[in-house]
Image (cartoon, rainbow, N blue to C red; front, side):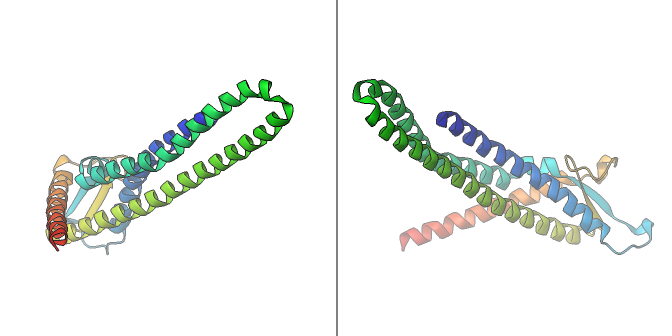
Length: 211
């Protein structure tokens, strides 16, 4: 039963990561729509509009991919000790069934209660791990959304746009001409900015190691 629960745990971790990325797409699309709707109305002939495919943005933004990979590795590392405990418990439970006949009912009752207690403790540890990953995933999601929203807002101001909409999985636009799609342009600047940031972080890390 516990081994089955562990598999469910690992699936929950994987599914949580996927849902986290999907939520980023949805929230980002809605956020872009709200930013657009809050813009003070002017003559429609003066509007400079564009839209971003938020699903493509999430899929191709290098930082999203890097952070998702890091979170997956961390999830696996955090789950590894629990997996080892579960396998050890499973082995002991199998030995218990074989030993119970030889050692008698009194030993079997005492050992059975001990194993039941450990099973409950492992279940609690599993739930705590899931909660920890959910909380850390939520922080990561909020941070990434905030960074991208800030970048798009600055990009829109720099390029002189009145409205920047979001589309894709969080569709707020049912139709728009392709020439209004600025997804690739935004992605290019986002990835270039992220690449520069990564280089700067490596330099700081190396200087810190020298000290």
